[in-house]
Amino acid sequence: MSALKYTIVINDQRFTLLRDQIICDAPNYFTAFFEGPFQETSEGVREMTLYRDPYLFKFVHMYLSGYEILLQATTSPVTSRKRAGSKICS
Image 1 (cartoon, rainbow, N blue to C red):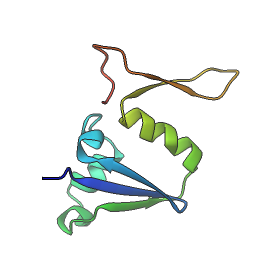
Image 2 (cartoon, rainbow, N blue to C red; image 1 turned 45 degrees about the vertical axis):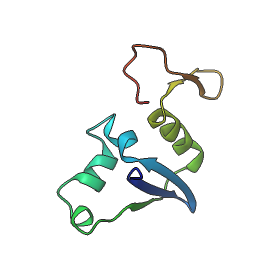
Image 3 (cartoon, rainbow, N blue to C red; image 1 turned 180 degrees about the vertical axis):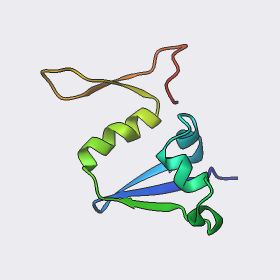
Image 4 (cartoon, rainbow, N blue to C red; image 1 turned 120 degrees about the horizontal axis):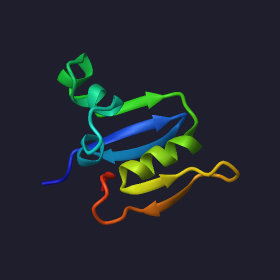
């Protein structure tokens, strides 16, 4: 059995998230949209389109993939793999 997949389209760039990824940080916008009490949920919708910055969404995607996002005031965001025992999505 394959894992349930959702597609997030950000300004024509496609990102795939697994159900496990979106529920690890629940409640959030994705769990509300895909699993909440909305018409999209009852219709089985598995794609969401957002008009946001795809560069920034890459960091959301990495966070939900288990990376810790480290923001530094003087540089671009960097990532590191989660440390054992931390409460970051994996």
